[in-house]
Amino acid sequence: MKRIASWLAILVASLAAGAAGAQQYPSKPVKIIVGFAPGGGSDFIARVVAQKLTERMGTQVIVENRPGAGSVLGSEYAIKSPADITRIVQLSRGPYVVAVHPSVQAKTLQELVALAKRDPDKLAYASSGNGSHVHVATEYFLYTAGIKITHVPYKGTGPALNDTIAGTTQLIFGSVATALQYVKSGRLRALAVTTPKRIAAAPDVPTVRESGYPSYEVTNWHGLVGPKGMSKDIVERLNKEANEALKSKDAEKVLAGDGLEPAGGSAAEFAVILKNEVARWGEVVKQAKVRVD
Image (cartoon, rainbow, N blue to C red; front, side, top):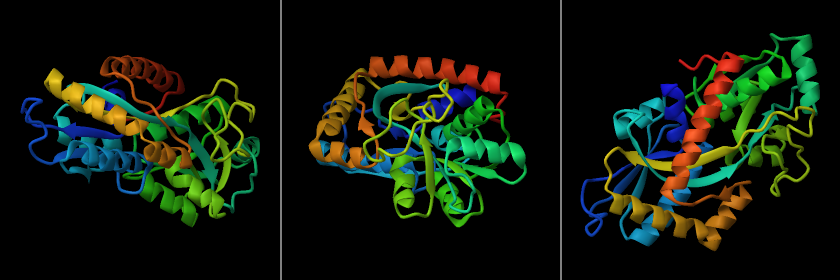
C-alpha cells in the first residue's frame, strides 16, 4: 500500500520548497522533481506547468528527472518519505493509449487478446517501471481480459516507448502526450484509449469499454505535491498560481493537442482524489494479484 500511495501522489512531480513565508516565497529557484526519465507524459506535464509558473511567479521553476523504482526514488529524494506529503493541486487528466508495434497481428483490442490467448509467450509489454501506474493499469487490463503478457519495466515512459517503437517490446499503455505522435506517423498502432469517452485528438480510436471490456476504465492524471510541513500560505500561493496557469488559453491548447485536459481545483479536493485513488488501486492490486515490489 505504501508503494501505491507513492506512485499516485508523485505521478507527476514533488515540489521541493523552502521554509520561507509566503511573502518571501519564492526567494530562489523552485525545483519540480519528476520520478521518471525524460520524454514521458509526466515529464511533459511537469515542463508545461514549470514554464507557466516561471512566467507567473517571476522565479525560475526547474524540472529535474529522478527516475527509478516506479517513481519511488524521485519521491523519496524530494519528500524523504512517500507518506509525508502536502497536497497542492491536480494538474491534468486524460487517457492512456493502448498501442502496439505495427508488426503485431492485431488491429483491434479483441484481436490482441485473441493473439495473447493463442500464443501467450509471443508478446511483451513495456512500462515506466515496476510498480508504476502504467504497470498496474496494464496488469489490470490483462486481468480483466483474462490474459498474460510478459512485463518489461523501464525507468520511465520515454525509454519504454522507444523500445516499443523499435519492436523490442510489442505493447505499451502510453500517455497521449508521448504516444500519439508515433501513432499518427505509423510507428505505433493505437487499439484503444482507457477513458470512458473517446478523445478529440484521436476520434477514430475506440475506448476499452467499446472494445468489449465495459468494466475497465483508467484515467492517467497528474498532480503536484510537496513535502510534509509546507506552510498553508505557500500551498495556497502555489495552488492559486497553478490554477491560473492551467486556465491560460495556450496551456489549455497544448494539453488538448495531446489528448489531456487541465484539472485544477483546491488542495482539499486533490486530497480527496488521492484518498479515493489509493483505495481504488489498492483493491485492484489485491484482486489482480499485481506484484508492485
